[in-house]
Image (cartoon, rainbow, N blue to C red; front, side):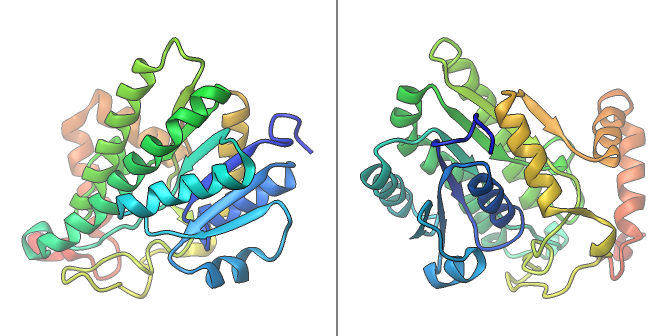
Length: 271
């Protein structure tokens, strides 16, 4: 049991699968009281099981009222919030010129505004505890990715928001950070939005070769304990960020080529 998490209240958005589920289970294992939200409490309970230190709440993070009710419910149950992990998110895979604008709006509503809403309503309690606010971002928040315009935009916005907030809160004892996983084995690509907003239903990647959600969760929780500023995961992710910073034109070509080689890549029409 980690002393850093023992008895702390950890609030996670999106906990029924993938990184969110792994974070919830790992936080419980470290002795934390864990609140998770999702659009279905039944799905959350099926995924995470029963635990006296687990609190499942129905909430759609794209709705401001739901986010307020979620934080209010956690405080009513446990009287405090020590860590907020803004994890809920969806992706997309479609050319911008072919994508309905509703797809980009949905991604911004969930990936960006969901984090803003939850942070707004959790902040007074986190300030009292001198706690941690974390955003699960992406390499796409450092380097724009083709066919993921809405996803990249939402993650760039998330990082800008968190960096501004970190600076505002510099003298308060609150720690603000974000993490950028690379490709993680999860269902995010299965539910990624296509051009018309429907889930693509299958992943273009070999999920068995990707970092596990459990390993990703371990890195995130260790980063929270050490109050890291940012974490970029995977060698590929670190290299992408470095090349994009030093040789942006080269990064354009390399990123285009990488995504062109995906199975059924939408970029093939541009090649």
